[in-house]
Image 1 (tube, rainbow, N blue to C red):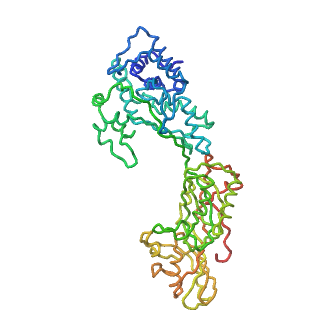
Image 2: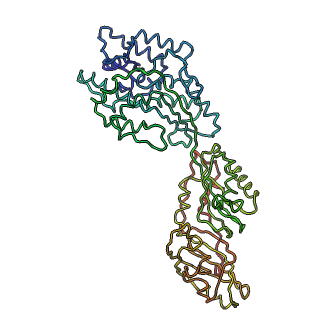
Length: 561
């Protein structure tokens, strides 16, 4: 059933005679259901002509400022025949890689500049889908986004003023919000075609995005008058090639008066010289997150690349030993590494390991079985004897936030090998075992003052256990509040940490070795459900059974730590 009624004939006659396409006419007539827009262009134009011819005795409105050549209904019929004479589609790639029309006789809509004409046809959709398939991305669904030339808003505004004026003569009104948005109509037509061609649903929440950017050579010409009348709306931006952005144009259109607009821009808009072109078709996948725990066994390995003044100090890092494998397997462009705290280059991380997470940017592969994740973990562990990874799994972005939450509320267990300047006996260290919840004040250590603000931080040493080795050495096990500088607690940092082991024992003390024995969360976070659109199907008995943050540490020894 044809969507227009007798009440719409006024607008339909007016717009068609000025050079507007049938789908844009539907938009101005408020047709807000999808089916009519999806019909082939030839069929739409033919039905529209029949509808307008049905009232032969009615007079056709004269259009103010008509285009140079009047478009008669019979001429439009001939134009349609020319449009589809060599096939339904008329899209081709031009030398610079953009897409344009093959048919020089094609009458380009003076409102949408061809967007709702040939760029809705199946041939164009197939070309976009070919690019998507050639991109090499894995995806279960997709979100489709489009960017239109900014002067489409100007041309639509001009057509609206024309229709509004003529309808006012009939005591009728047409508000801006009564017009169906161009982007909405375009998606109504193209979404089913994309789903059919690619075999996946369109989902606005999908992490995989296909974007098409349209452009038109007459953008500056159509928008220049707005820059003259409303210069404050158009300010140069660093990342923008032109000041005439969609948002800036809309801001100017809301500011300019109807009278000033009519003086500067023709209503109806003139027929364009050319159709739109496609500047780019891009595919991108949202980041996926891989998390786990790592153990570091080397005392000569930084957590992240150690580069000073452009010079690398050590050949590798924990970050690189893990992330390089993930980049390859996920076919990602880049990564961002984060962890729950960090250890110094000469400190080992033992026990249950340190939680880490890696954001993989624009991954091309996202589907993995549980066995493939296990094999990836084994591959990382076999590649180096400096680190080991455990509990490797895919997690959500929210889980990464939980990893960072409450870092100061966690407790950590350390093992430190301590040297004293004067000989000691076992009884000299035993009193440390009785100290509980010792509060210390730590001024920002000198060794990190270049990257941390100067402040005094109060930390808690929950418990200590000393193991006497010889008259100058003992091993100290400490359970502390996260964020405690252990090295400084031992040697005092020139009095910047008070009290310290040296002051407690009345000796000069220094630390020879330090190991992180255990990292335990003070508050367990509930497991965040994994999102199916970017995670592998893992059985609950393996990775999905527990979140990597909730690793249950083995029980502490009955005595001391």
